[in-house]
Image 1: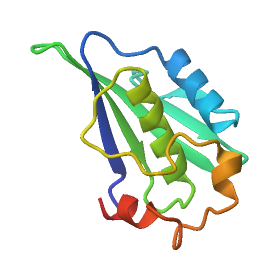
Image 2 (image 1 turned 180 degrees about the horizontal axis):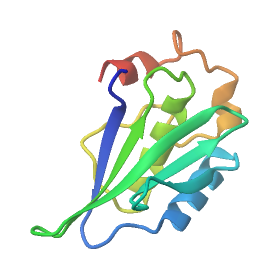
Image 3 (image 1 turned 90 degrees about the vertical axis):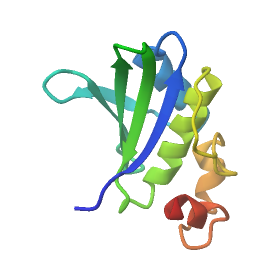
Image 4 (image 1 turned 180 degrees about the vertical axis):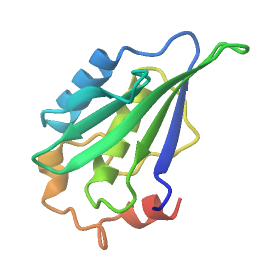
Length: 133
């Protein structure tokens, strides 16, 4: 099994609530984004759109000693649709005040209906760079 693609988004004082994050992702993508707790402790959230076969995981992390608040985004590198949801979630978290070392793709934050018509992972501008990171 290959390692998932990972992005980290840190916040200064708090993590935005998952309800707000999922709503913003839904509004940005124009798709219904379902979210549910994954894992026994409830520390992992699974966001998905079954119709478009997109799914990613979002894990909140708080470093107690430094009071650093972080969301970790993880997605399957073999799903050709996941980069869209991954980048859109990254876009939303940055808009909610987060900071990340990752650069957004040129198509991040655009509605799925707009991006979908040209979605071909081999030829979509910016997609190759996303996979090489």
